[in-house]
Image (cartoon, rainbow, N blue to C red):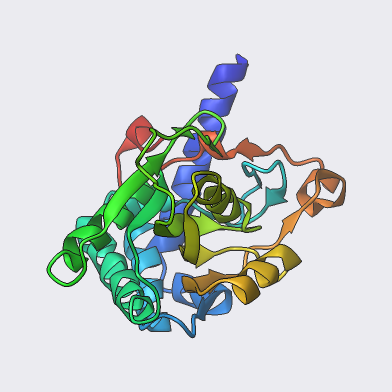
Length: 260
């Protein structure tokens, strides 16, 4: 079979499987096992599960190579949540409340966020906070083909002495928010906090603990999604093909190929 057709067939089968899974009430048990509440968020576990269930943002029982090159069998794609304005607003409000609390201890001049779907969270927060605390949103370059964050931002968007909170939608290792923090520092600003909607590190990566010890750090939930080096991946050992994160469907509610 043509390789492209074979790939489309595999993606179609993945979509069908996930739809059946989400249509079954047992998916609630799956969420209960992997979703953890965050001590810095007012979102309850049931609210977080509703966000994931309604957006169908988590793919179960799959085999995915993520941006870092590691493999996982459970994948969280924030772009599915970004399609749903009410769910985005729920998350933005919670993040905004945390930011208001942080502002009691630090002046906050702006938010630095990748120009990915994460920008919708930052822009939602800025709108919600404007009556209380105007903040500007600065976008770092984002390459949707590689998933990498760039470092070049326009001059004067971050000025010497500015206090910034850096944020992303999700993180596994903390490298993305750390990179954003480096951009702030390189422009003479100060990082006074870090934010992500979801951690997906499963406690595997100690750098996350280091960042959380160094900065006020908001996360809305922790999702248990173990990741492996290729040589340690159990799916690879069974000879199973994997998907690149770029190939995954962003909308399981769409019909046919539109889901891909």
